[in-house]
Amino acid sequence: MAPTTQHYDYLVIGGGSGGSGAARRASGWYKAKTAIIDDGISGGCCVNVGCVPKKMTWNFASINEALKDSEHYGYDVPSYTFDFGKFVEKRSAQIKSLNGIYESNWAKEGIDLVKGTAKFVSKNGDNLELDVKMKDGSGTVRYSAPHVCIATGSWASIPTDIKGAEHGITSDDFFSIKKLPKKMVFVGAGYIAVELAGVVAALGVETHMFIRGDTFLRKFDPMVQDTLTQRYIDTGIHIHKSHPGIKSVELLKGSPTGIEDPSQKVLKLTMNDGSSMETNELLWAIGRPPKTDTLNLSALPDLKLGSRGHIVVDKYQNTSVPGVYALGDVTGQAELTPVAIAAGRKLSTRLFGPPELRDSFLDYANIPTVVFAHPEVGTTGLTEPQAIDKYGKENIKVYHTKFPAMYYHVFTAEEKKKNPTEFKVICQGPEEKVVGMHIMGTGVGEMMQGFGVVVKMGAKKADLDSCVAIHPTSAEELVTLR
Image (cartoon, rainbow, N blue to C red; front, side):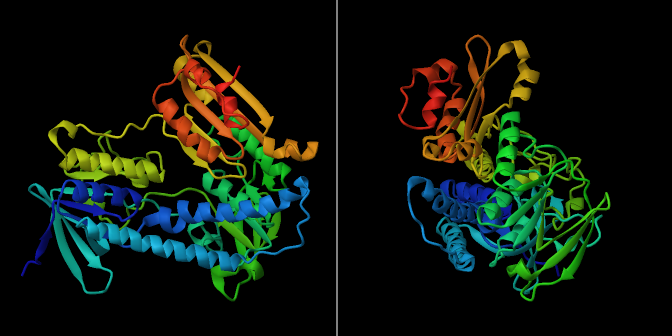
């Protein structure tokens, strides 16, 4: 007897930020019968092992930095310690609360939550069929819908060609640590390695970064790469440039409590050049491949994948299979939480909204983002090399400034030098349209959101100049550049 099929207007695979945004717009706004199928913890990567715990931990580390800075202002701060484990408990409680908020919002908007692992079975006429292995062990249930959105995100990877690599951890595991190690190695040069290395270094951990080139954040503007890499070096982080790579990882001593307490763990890292190093913990930050392994995509033979396994989509989030859509990290497009949310909302508006909105899509140009490094980095638009490639060097004008923020005016000259604020605005053509903005320094995370709107609106340098400065702020330098 054929299994009973549960039919919906819209099935969303993945309960992270993008999937939630898509489902809530479809059901909450346009009353489409919608289900979210999720095999993880509600909220996905951002809520559980990404943006939220990362920013909370960044805040924790920033408080430690502020306590150390206070001596420059004349504060006599007595010797102090911090309880990282207690902080982790509070962070976990906040995340658990957010998990509940996600599920409560879905219920309020009429979305059914199906806890299980989905795989495609077939395309039956206008409907797509999926089998879901239920998480509670009750068996497999078949679902169908004319519209299916894949929003499964990505997963943190560990090398498969390095002996003993499994003795290291990923960024997902990082948030299980309750007692900090004395020494920690990060492999990678992207924003995950930079953010987490900055956090543990600010908390007093001996921190090493293994990078293949001379700088990290290599997709960012050269100003950001050069200044932030040097800043990390100046503050005591060991940057191993042109690193030969790790040949093997040997566990010399394990931790009795596993991931939670790496302080007693000892790893021996042997490099490809024969050198070696011992450390308490090793974090692989080598990229996040798309999470598609359980979807049985072979059931959709016409589905196109990119060279790295990402699902190929057009500007409307359509895949090559009618009725199947994808968004977020699984597509490899601007892998940022707000991007996935915005793309999900636009997609659902197009599918279920009024006729006048049936051409809705997300414009991926000029998306602002912030790296919560120490200090923060904000960026939107083109880097200087990208602008030159696109418009020609003769059509580009760059405005640049570097200065110590007022916060550091009472610091010694040496300390001021270690804490630069640096801005770059890239303009194009005789009208000097702003096509790129790159800022780094204390407080730029909040600053970037406002200036992101400015760049998105197509502002010109004259528009920046026409705005009266707010004094004294670092941000005023962006409207007084010469």
